[in-house]
Length: 212
Image (cartoon, rainbow, N blue to C red; front, side, top):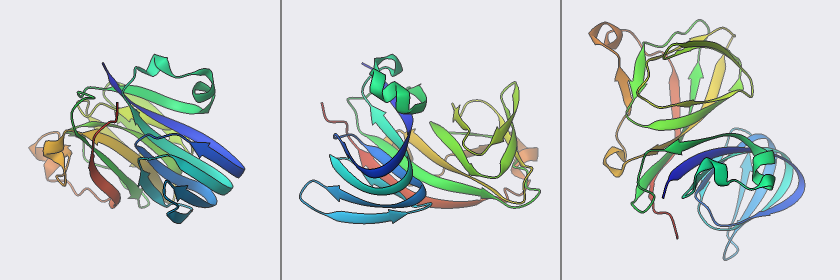
C-alpha cells in the first residue's frame, strides 16, 4: 500500500460536493462558503488555506487549488480526477501510520535568493504570484504563475525571485516526529551563514490518520 499527494485545480461557479479526504484547500481567487458534515460553515477568500478531512459542500465563484493525501498510487486516479490534477506524486511514508500534513505560503521580496538547501520531508509547491528561477538538483527551470513542482527534500534547491514579489503555497507530508518542527536544512556551513530572506506564513500543521 502506498501514499500519494495530489494537487487539483477547480474553477467553480456555483457548488460542488467532495467526498471524505484529508485536503488543504487554497483559494487562488474568489470567495467560497464551505459546509462540513454536521453543518459547520467557513467562508474562505483569496490566499486563505484551510484543512478539511470530511465530506464538503462548497459554494462560490473563483478557483480552488486543493492538495489531497490518499492511500493509493498516483496511477489510481480516475478519469475525472485526472482531468482536475495538476501534479501527483508518491510519498515515502506508511499510509497506515499517522502523519503530519503541513501547509504554508512562502513569499520572496525583490531580488531574494535562498541559500542552497533541502528539507526533511517531501511536498508539492505551486506559484501563485510572480516568477522564480529554481535550481532543483541537476535541473534549472523558470517557474511562472500557476506552475507546480515536487521537491523530495533530498535534492539541493536554490530559489531566485525574478519578479517584484513572488509567492508560492506549499503542502508537505511529514513523519510525526516533525510535528511543529522546522524542515529546512542548509546544504553546508557556507549556505547556513546566508540570510534566508523569505517570509513564511503557516496555515496549519496537523497530525492525521488516513481512514480505510
